[in-house]
Each structure stands twice: as structure tokens, then as C-alpha cells.
Image (cartoon, rainbow over the protein chains, first blue to last red):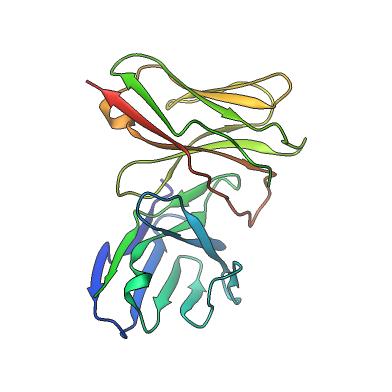
Length: 115
Length: 111
């Protein structure tokens, strides 16, 4: 139980285009979801916290107009990278507060490559 | 959240126990000690967590020092599938909480 999926698992796009990444909790409802970014050989960096039905809270240094987050339902959060550039190429991972309030459940990640 | 210190890397042999240390000298009384691991090219997964007492589950054991300034994650019999980066994270719990990931320990398991 407590499975989180992400779609797509990988995506390649051209510079200047926008990319949407979906994060779904498959067998539980998630009031809160988190978005992380991970560059090669580095640790996860939290980008933002999203609560269902409200605006996301972004970490310092993360551009809210570039990384649009929508948490429209208790099972779906989306991250849209707008006007993507090569420096946005990274591994994007979402997580959700699951059935156990003291545990986060992570998705498998989405690898974004911007050419 | 308080900071944790872990060795950058450790090596183990298959089917042998592995003890992964974590120092957290500035831990507060309400901080839980969480362990997550990240297999290559995957999202992290929860391993175990505890507050004061030692904890056991099907994946691992967590030994917490009496003064709570350090803890050890114990994998009783390492397998090749346990090769991952292990993160020790402190958090005071509650809902809507954020996890702050450090660099973790890269565990290599030799066949």
C-alpha cells in the first residue's frame, strides 16, 4: 500500500518549451505533497510544499513563476516547468504524506532533459 | 531541523551485517530520527524511524544512543539490493512536515 506514481518517468524537451509532471497517490489520499529536485551526485533539494486546494509554498530561491504547482485533488499534484532551459535538466521527485503521518511516500522520479 | 553527520560511504559484504552511523549532537527533545534510502535512479523509500527506544521492522533495526546524540541503522544481512544512499534525517513530526536531506551514506555491497 501507499504507492505514489509519477508520469512521465523521463522526458526530453527543447529549450523554451513547458513540461508538466504528474504525481499521483494511487491508494491513499494526500493532503500534502512535496516536490524535490536532485542534480547528479547530489542530494534531494525541496522545491515546494503543496496542499490540496491551496497555493503551494516555495522554498527560498525557487522561482514560483517558473515551477508551477497545482494540487487540485487529494490524489494528484502537478509540476509544470515553464520555458525550460538546459539548467533545469534534473531528476524531479514528488512525495506525499501518507496513511502514516510520520512517513513520506516518494514517487519513482521523473528525469527531465532539456536540449 | 537539527543537522546530522554521516560518513560519505561505507562498504559491506553480502550476507554480513551493516552498521550505518549517524551523529546528531544538536537533536532536540521532540526530534524523531528518520532513515530513508534511495536506490539508484529511484525515489527515496522509508526505512525506519524512532524517538528514544530502539526500533525493529522487517527492513532494519534502529539503535538510538541513550543521550540521543547518535544512532545506528542496522541491516542484519546485507544483500546486493541494499546498495543505496542512506539518509539520516531529524524531524519533530506532525503533519505537513518537510524533510531536509543531507548527503547521506553511499552503501556498497560486495558479492
